Every structure is written in C-alpha cells, then in structure tokens.
Image 1: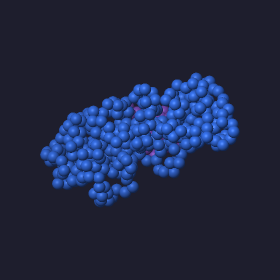
Image 2 (image 1 turned 30 degrees about the horizontal axis):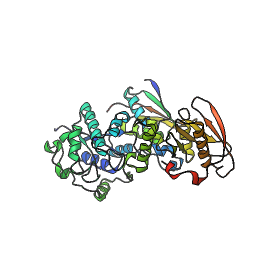
Image 3 (image 1 turned 180 degrees about the vertical axis):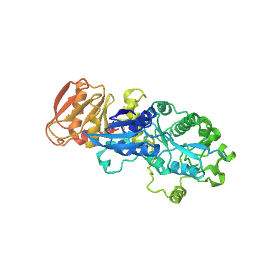
Image 4 (image 1 turned 45 degrees about the vertical axis):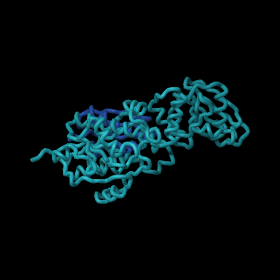
Length: 77
Length: 347
C-alpha cells in the first residue's frame, strides 16, 4: 500500500473530481490519496464520487486556507 | 439464466436523465452513468466563485443523480475535443452560441466509444421528442442516432414509444411496454414519474445545464473572439467569461471588474497572467486588463476601476497597476462619472 498526493489547487469542480478519478485509476486497492484543492465544493463532490464508486474517505476538511480529502482506494467491483 | 445487459446512461444532473436511467434499472439492466465536462457546464464553477452563492449547498447534480440511482458515474473531460464542436458545428447554432445538435451527436458518439471499450450493450439518454427546439425534435433525433454511429443501440426510455423500436426493444433486452411516450415541453409527466420513484429535490436549472444557451454568456464569448481576432479559446478564457463585469472601452482591450469578494479572490488568481489594477486609497474591485494597451488606455482603465470602488465620488483616487513581469505603476485619477461609462462598452 502506498500513499499519494494530488494537487488540484485552483481547479474548479468538477475538474478536481476528474483528476481524482483519473489518478485513482492508476492506483491499487488499499492505496491512499490526499487531494489538495482550493474549491470548497471538493468537500462535497469527492466524498460523493467516493461513495458511488466504492472508495473510502478517511478524512477531509480545511487547512491553511485550502481543502483536503484523504481517501482510500476500494476493491474493484 | 439470461445474460444481464449493460447500458451506459448519459447523466447531465437534470431530471430527465435521472428518470431514463431509473426506468432501465427497474427493468433489471446494469446501468453506469457517463457525464461529459465541456468547460461550459453550469455545474460547479460559478457556485465556487461567487461569495453570495456560498450559502447554497455546493452539490454536483450529476454525482447526486448517480448516488440516488446507486450507479457508478464516469466524468469525462472533453474540453479540448469540444472546441471543434463549438467552432465548427455542422448543424449550426441554436438561439445563442449553443451547437445543441452537434453537441448531442458528439456526446452520444463518445458514449458509444466508451460502451464499446467497456463491453456495454447500448446507450440511453433522457431525451424527449419535442422538448428542445434543436436537438430533441422528431426529425433530429434520428440524426443523433445516425451521425453518432450509435444507430439502433441508442434508446430513449422516456419517449421510446414515439420512436421506432431499437435493438434493445427488438432483442427483448428491455420490455417496450414499460417504456414511455412522453413528448413536448410539458414537464408534468416527468414530475409525476419522479414522484412515483420517490425522487425529490432534483435539479431543474432554467435554460438547461450549458452556458452556451445563455444570451449574456454567448455575447461575451463572441466579444472575446472579436477582440482577439481569432476564435481560439482556452479553459481560463471560458472561466473568466463567467466572472465579473466585462467592459470594453476600446476594440483593443477589455476590463474584467470583480463585483464582490468571491470574484475578487478568483480574479487575484490570474494576476500573473494579466495586467491587473486596484485602488489603494479606497476599497475597490480587482480588475484584469485583457488586451494590448497603451499608456492612455491604462489611464482610462484606472478611471473606470476607480468608478467601481468606494472612492467613486472622491476627487482623486490612487490606482496601482501591476504587470505580469512584476513591474508596477501608480496612477492618481479622477473616477469616471457613471454617465461617461458608455452603455455600449458593457459586454
């Protein structure tokens, strides 16, 4: 299991979701990915995307004027 | 046991695509959603920019639809490929800069490519005969099926009974009797079906989900092309058309003037790409200058900037101008009186 970071700063939704989706496609189940963004819509959209696609949100919130979502890649269905 | 058939559903986030996908799920079809991001989608962007909108929940309706349906959603970035659809629409534009028919053909074609790659049997959309003046007419719906290459693998569950049977009907993958015969612009049948399925709080954006159907947005887009002498555009251009007041005091440049704090912050993100200015003696807007400007143009721009700040009635206002290379300059100007800001400058 590995940890990755994705810089989605200055992108507006749905671009951070698209970048997350494309990054997750390259990862293995159990890997973790922290998405860093500036659009607060990310805090709703990435968890929604995770719920419908079987990934787990481990943490999310605001930090230093930015937002972050930490997710764990689920098993393929 | 019969094989479970798979359909890919075009999900816009609106009610019709939500219902079309639900009708298929009710028939035991495996459905996954696909949503295309053209750059002109109303979803997302402006909600994130304008501070006054921040009390509204920031929800992506396509994701919301997929979650309500319990299906996967694949969001596809088609910003680059979409340029050709917008710039060279074979079937022309609608009332504004909306190439609806070419757009639908393109999206169904992309969905077909996706379906073939992922082993899906057919494509569904929430189209309804007679609902849209360009892409959803009895004579244009077959054009979408034909020119997208989907042919009879394109099923419109909400109006299928008004159209010839498709492959899924003929092969018995779906029960045609349980499909619908909606037509026209009346939304009542859709609302009743939504109620039957227990869908509430669904999105119903006026004018659809695309900025290109919006008259003011289309005008700004045409002004951008005219001002540059070229119809090229980048993602940043189309985003900036959604923000602020656009004022063109001369053919060679325009100003983008923020209207509130959220827009101020958003425009500040572009200060390395554009000449920008703001008042320092009084609170005021962030202003981007788009175009090649002379010294006299900058002074005019500074007077307009001062007109939209708190110092609009002051005798003199200080305006700082910053250049992308880091250089800067200060102007002491008299704010332009409102009657001198010509109506034809407002894009």
